Length: 90
Image 1: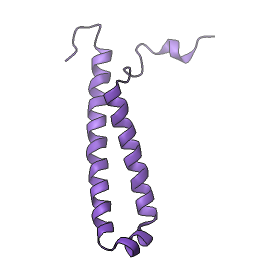
Image 2 (image 1 turned 180 degrees about the vertical axis):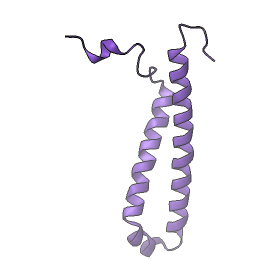
Image 3 (image 1 turned 90 degrees about the vertical axis):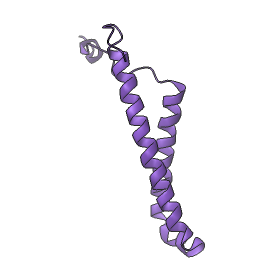
Image 4 (image 1 turned 30 degrees about the vertical axis):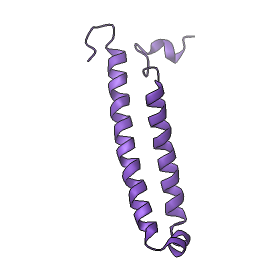
């Protein structure tokens, strides 16, 4: 019986570089912290006042920008990895 991996004509993803791994981990951490901040927003607002909203907005912006950058870099690395044998790499 053949494995499903033998049926895939190309690797599923490029090897992860240190920069891509760092970006992925920052994105995951940002999403986790954003979820915790939203979950405990009422106690944080009672503790920090209007600073809580600024913290929420800043963290949401960081996570959005970091996630967008990581997805763009990951897609570019995957395209380069898949096209490396064809000589079409950017």
